[in-house]
Length: 117
Image 1 (cartoon, rainbow, N blue to C red):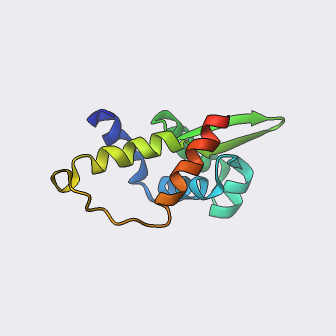
Image 2: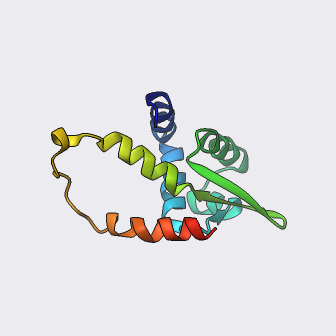
Image 3: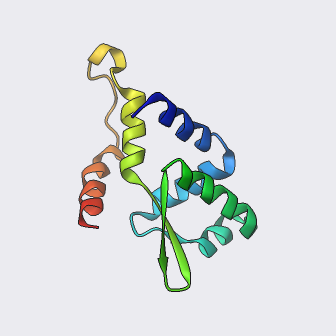
């Protein structure tokens, strides 16, 4: 990942509403959530949600897919993993210093699910 791409992604996540949307989509898993449910859950106006979804899509952190009348949005786990890898690249001069946590254990499962699509 290049610094410009990382900077754009971090800037997008630097907004409280976009961060809330992204976290909701990460928690939802690879199937994603339809836009109406995102509006209801986060109590956003449709136009506001549309603006923020477009921004997150533009920087590559989420993807939308049409399913009948609905659009489902899902986090792009590969982009999220690339951003995290960029942020932690050469951490502590290459030493294994990062603590293991329960969310890192889910990474292989996400990658398998993404590969299956």
